[in-house]
Image 1 (cartoon, rainbow, N blue to C red):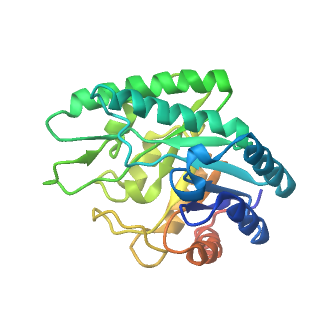
Image 2: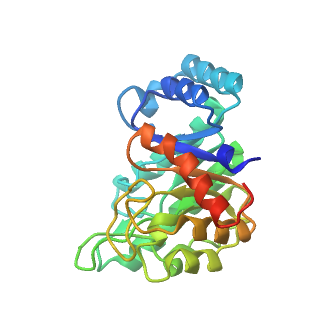
Length: 275
């Protein structure tokens, strides 16, 4: 498959799902990513009739769909009652994947409040293990994303934002558990994209997410050229590591992300990557 066809778009909350599918097909996309938390796209809005219609629409256009859970939901929650609700939230995303004819659901490791990091990591890993077991029964693929760093003096910090933290979850052994590598998040920490690529086994990476940002800077999702990520070098590293999966643009407007597909291909070609 050509590189351009491997680059999809994160719809997030920008469009109603059915509208997003039609828009993606019209613009020649092969996959999109969407969050189903709010408005017309809220999880409870998908009854059997609507799910069947979405599945037919995806089949009609030959489009792959990924469901992206909300990173504001703390997967590392341990408080009574709330913890159970988080588990159910993640399981409902898993349940919706086959109903919609989607291809995967993406999750996060949660966040800690500095002093409770160890407890949060243990709670989050246990929850992910339970959700992955549920996914095995449903024959659903679960992806775990590396998230972004927060300022050093912030009280709240996302988990799995460094190689070491992310690796803590990698021993969840299941054919239904893979990774989602967000390259711009890696650019924010000392090990950088190169360090993450060196640590990763790309047979376990299903998706790579793209945006521009500034080296060792703060969390921003910018179109290519607005930060200082060397995308040519990035594509050469990732493709050279044997990655065959999809890339997903996650920044700016839908038009920004659509135009950037060609920009990324140009960067890859200039770096000597077969496109």
